[in-house]
Image (cartoon, rainbow, N blue to C red; front, side, top):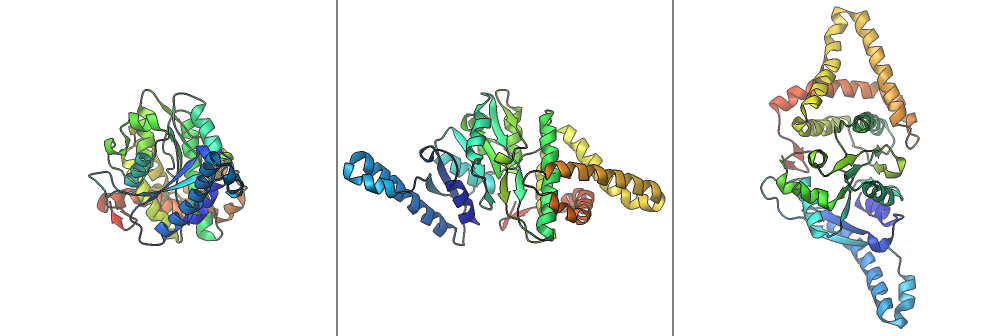
Length: 341
């Protein structure tokens, strides 16, 4: 998936000389290093040609032929140290390698739209107190799993964006984030933050709490990247399990939301036996409200056609909402990228 991501980043409508792409290679055992090197050499030739044109008039033709592309820099991630491990360690290594004041973060399975970098920078710089910006992530692909995951992510991110709009930040997606370096450094970076399997939420939360900075989570198609779907419905459950464990460090008001949401998905199982008609009426109201939420969230990218998978999405939603508290209680360890966290 990395080539798809890098192609999207190289196609950004942003001054190429002011954009550098740092690719963190976290001890990969596949062809990741080979792919990074191919793109690095491609952009390095462009840089050398431009440098030659500045110092030698005869090199102007080489400069004209060289594509105007952002430079790609390979970052070999350092071994984990202490609690800085997993994705937090990869991000911290890449941030440490760079010296830019503005940092845009995405994942290898994502493809940001052409105007992503420009619009993210605009959001980040329109307010001097803006420490971090998050965008939506839209699931691509066909088939049942892709459709269910698209509904699941839209359900989560539309809710989170609405909460952020009223000053109640719940979460943000680390695969689509912009940061000010001073804000990252003000909270101490990942070495100063508590360990979390959802490092994106942890960083977002601390920047939001810092007195000098705030955060912004717009529903804007210009900053909505495209991510590839998971393979199986069970993978959605495991992903949500990881997110739920990271959410254990949430604020007290979010715990109240978690509790109410858990009960709303657990009680219908017993209610169908005790008061079936009343339970069905309540469920019908719940499903109608959730359809309305998804109708709004899926407007981006004309994705409302995915609503055909709504019945299966509801089964998956009820499954993880009603069981995750107990699964995390007895099985708290998370496996991420073949690592136990």
